Length: 249
Ligand code: GLN
Image (cartoon, rainbow, N blue to C red; front, side, top):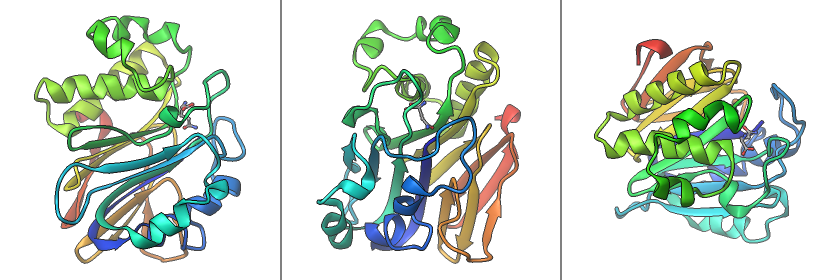
């Protein structure tokens, strides 16, 4: 199952988050420590989205190939700095296609989104939920995958004016009810706040003064990493972290 991370804080080179740490996403792509629910490596693609330090919408780089095989990323990641980053490496769920556009982060306007997990009984289990989306959203999904549909469901609530924490919590609740046993670790950011659900997969948080990191697996041995228990919703900014029961939204 995929591994993802989000960072808010002073601008840093993307490589300092993705490639350089001893247990970076690069390493987690071939030697993850905490895979649950199937999969051994995260070799079906990767993506990084970042907010330009001068402002403006996030920029993405996504590929449907292993992160370790990408010849462009090291230079790009060394030369690009950002204070708001969301990145992921993908292990495609059996039956789902390997495409550039199936790799997180998914995006619209100021938003970046990622899903670590699986919708059980896909796609029939969530046909009712999907059927409530505008048909245009279904026809323009990034990819025919559970993660892309989850993004459409969250985005639909955001477009309707829901607070991001509520959009994530309500989507997790609706999908968990329709497809019990699903693993629904979501990450959503606008570059100022990160919302993360912990539902079936691991997530750890590391706080530093003026900075916060959320990651499926700690990327180093810093004792500041704290594992978030299952069933929690994390709302993090560079200034602080709040954790609530997921069901409470
Ligand atoms: N099920 C999603 C996909 O195939 C996410 C995979 C994951 O978490 N491994 O894209």
